[in-house]
Length: 206
Image (tube, rainbow, N blue to C red; front, side, top):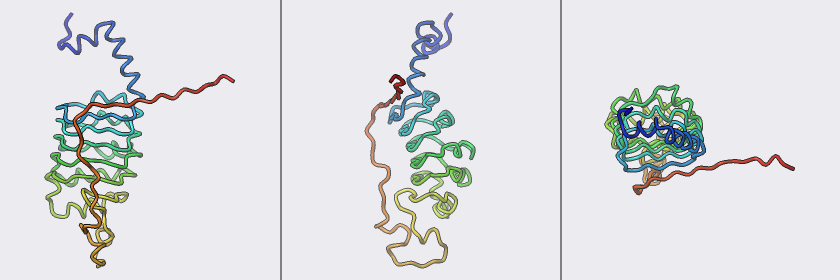
């Protein structure tokens, strides 16, 4: 019986089903994946990557990032250049306790309130959201800087003391957007598919 698509047909075939199970088992050991510029529309293939530390899924057609909610060991997540308009709720982000680098620039975010759910991400250090509609809103940077307390860099600049403490006038080098505070935290990527897996074996014999 045909199951609707070639992919589904292969998965439902006995031999291919066993092969698929092996792939899923291997994915549990992946610590690094890179799918840049491949016109992908879904992140469902990452649901079983529970050991993932670095995920580069940039320049695709992603709209939903819920499939990576089990990737709780993530340290770096690059989703720039997609079609994401809404972020998951605070529960999603509070689960990513190790996430430090998050690249979301060149997406479709419009509402500043939705972006503020990132304040639930306890160790987020650097965030990019430039070239998103929300970045054009008045007070965008001020709101994010004072909502995400762990943040050290936003877009292309380190957060200055002046941005944290209101009405505090400091020398030029400490002011927001000073050239000394420029930071290129998201260099250009090359189109490539890449994944790295590691496995740990314990020798119990003596």
